[in-house]
Structure formats: C-alpha cells, structure tokens
Image (tube, rainbow, N blue to C red; front, side, top):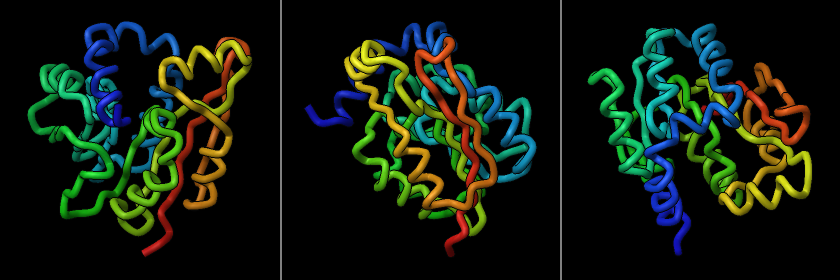
Length: 200
C-alpha cells in the first residue's frame, strides 16, 4: 500500500479519539504556539498536517495570523472544520501536492516529518519553496528513542525517528532557537525548532 493511502487509512481509525489520546505523547505543541505568537503574530501561516485543528484553534486564539491548514485525512479535516472558525482555510492535500500560488511567512509542522522519515529531504525542500525569504519554519517532532522496546512500538504505528531530522533542519535553515526535551523520564526525546529561510 502506498504511504499516503496507509496514512489516510490509519487516521480514519484514529480520528474519533485523536484529540483525547494525543496530549499523552505529542508534547511541545503548546510551546510551539507560544514561539509563533512571539515571532509572527500577524503573518500568513500554513500548518502542514493540521489534523483535527488542535494547533490552528490555539493559534487563532493566541495570534493574529492568517491561518491555512492542509492534511491528507478527510476524517481529520471533518473534525477540524467543525471546531475552527470559518475564516481558516482547510485543504485536503499534503506538501507534495499543495500549490497555493503564493508564499507564506511561516510554516508549522507538528509531528509530520516522522510519519514518512524517508521523505524528509523532499519535504524540507518543499517547505523552503513555500516560505518567503526569511520566513520561519516551526517544527515539533520526535527526536530519539529511549529504548529498543519503544522503537518497536513506534515503528508498529508507522513512526520513525532519529536525530538526523533536527540535523537536516539545522543544515537547511538559519536556526533561531531549538530545545530538546525528554518525555516520561527518557522513554523518548522530542524537539522544538524555529528556523529562518535565508534563501531567496
């Protein structure tokens, strides 16, 4: 099964209880909203992989950003549409196929890269194409496994993680700030990152 199809199928099952379970392990999402509010409070922001709209809802309350969200899953977007203000634009697509005809001041990716770790280089290239000069990329994602058992568990859920992702971000963007943190005493690590697109 193609990766995109498997993601859509997975989140069709997960959508009904996604908002209940994800706070237990998708850490750092509140912090990334604070970073965005401090840096780009009035800019056009795209969230790739917006899911049920959890972060877009928080951004709408805490910033003056003009918000757009994209996600592959129609089931997740259906939930997002019910909870979000109508002025937030939502599209069923992914970074690869999204062609808005404009560039953004900021792009946010929350636990997106580790869904398809093999495509990180392509995804980052696409983010750079979507960003204005000096536009900001904000990322919160898994960083490192704390044990072999947890690695097997996450791989079973289709998640791959590794320190290479943060290294790649730092090589492609001008790092403004980053933070690496432990979850549950070191069962795994996650990171929060803000970088600037210094290429024209």
